[in-house]
Image 1: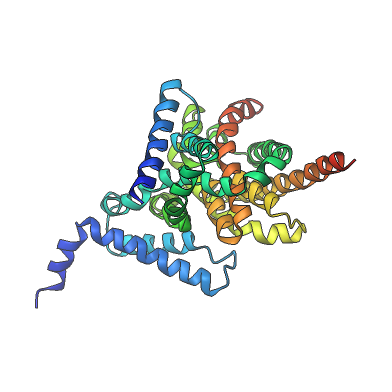
Image 2 (image 1 turned 90 degrees about the vertical axis):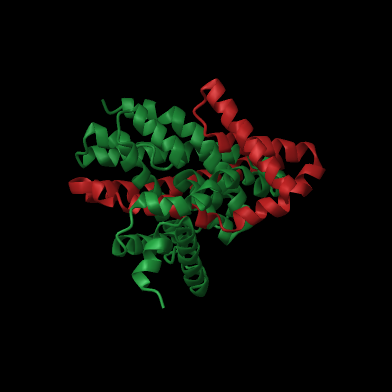
Length: 238
Length: 118
């Protein structure tokens, strides 16, 4: 039998192992989530990310090497975003009836996300650079990174904050809405799409198809609105 | 399935091309989503074609965030000395945005419904 380290050094450089590891970590996270009856605090993304992060650290693997395998999964984010037209299409009648509430909630939610982050950060003494980094956190990563860059923030740190916002939103939305006694799936979905982009949308799709459709449209419209809003909002603090 | 995938990728490509060309602040896939939605509204045949494959991709949307998430975990130390403050602002502001967004939706839905009934 060949030496294990020899096999490892062959496999570790191969994209296959990291693609397989990504799927396996997600299967574990998803199984845990399903086992717990989709309880909000058992978030499959968080579990998979922590498992893989630990694995990379323990095996002393660079992220570039990991990403050579994982890129095949990452690539599907674009097509999946396009495919969010499908739940929206299924809900097109409900969406048409709710056009006004959708637009009002979009503007209110988006403004609150940007302005409250700035106000709290400002009150706690964050630097202008960190405020610019934090402001676009609720919107989808490519938009947030672009805004952060344009405003003089740190794009990499913005990517970290966007991901954390998505996970926090996905975890918090169910207990928060239950606490507020908001049972309208359209309202719950739209709010989480606006406040917590794709990761919130993924959670909504898992919970209820109508919530998923409204989350998708919330995320899409907020990408546009935050791009227009964040530069103006940041101007209020300088 | 291959036709559906081709259509989805074509929508994404058209979206990417259009945002770059016009310098719009929206990501290409988001514009591609609007395009696919318009096509589905225009043609029930297109809708029937993309639904099985598209729903297949969406079934595990969470999975698709994992590779980017792993990259981010490596940068968590970037939060640095201000980490606690950033996290506090992030969590509070996300909770506020969720509550205000859903609250406004319910309120406006109630108002507009009342008006139509009247």
